[in-house]
Length: 99
Image 1 (spheres, rainbow, N blue to C red):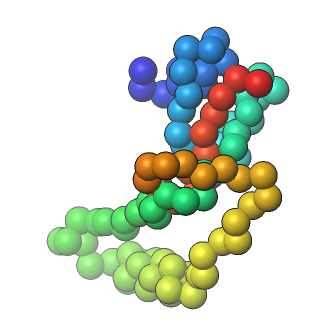
Image 2 (image 1 turned 30 degrees about the horizontal axis):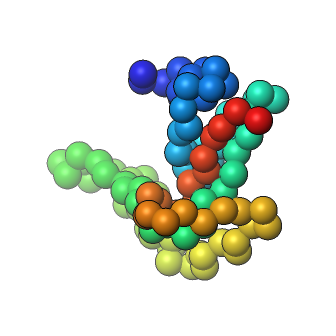
C-alpha cells in the first residue's frame, strides 16, 4: 500500500484503520469514511530542506517566511468530538474508519 487512496479503500472495505495528518484527512473526504481527530498525541514535524550549494535569495526569503510563520503559530484548539488514545502517534492526526 503506497497511496492515501489505497489506504482509504482498505478502511472503507472494513479491513483496518489509518492515521493521517489532519491536512490529509481534510483533503481526502469520502462519504463512506469517518475521520475522528486524535488530540493527545505528540506533534508531527515538517522540515524545509534545499541543496546547500544553491544561494538563491528566493530560497532565503522563503525559509525566513516559513520560520516566521512557524514561530508565530500557537497550538490549534482541541476540536469538539475529538478522541484520546492511550498511546502517542502524532498531533493533529485523524483516524479514518468506516461508519
